[in-house]
Image (cartoon, rainbow, N blue to C red; front, side, top):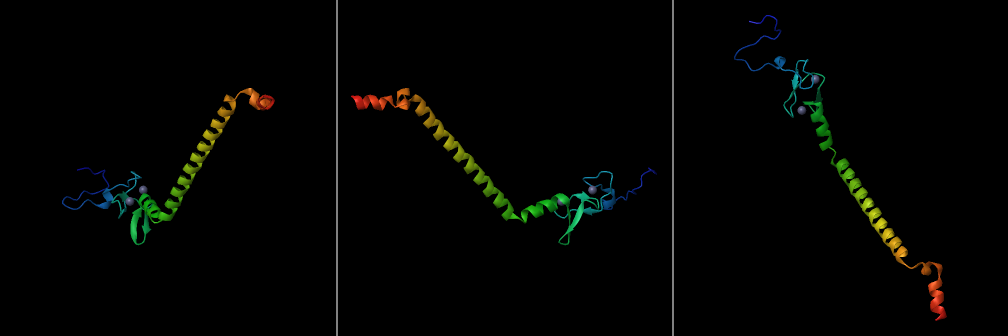
Length: 121
Ligand SMILES: [Zn+2]
Ligand SMILES: [Zn+2]
């Protein structure tokens, strides 16, 4: 029917892997299927991981899942950062309160005349 098509269409047979295209490279023929997500990929996109063919994105996910300590540590770092910011904010509020308190005081207090006046009375 279409002599220009390089892929022969076999009616009744399961969709051949050759007819599939790589999810990432549409111009390339798929040679393998990811055992995790089931996507079709070319030879460059799949990696043999523990006897199973997985795509690069699934391998990254698996590597991340295999390192829960790392994610925990980063979460602890985040909490530490939040605590630090909160501490700085509290300190800033305290300094601001002390500063406004000093400003609200009469200038005589800073000069020491208030105490002199009390002492004279
Ligand atoms: Zn995958
Ligand atoms: Zn590819």
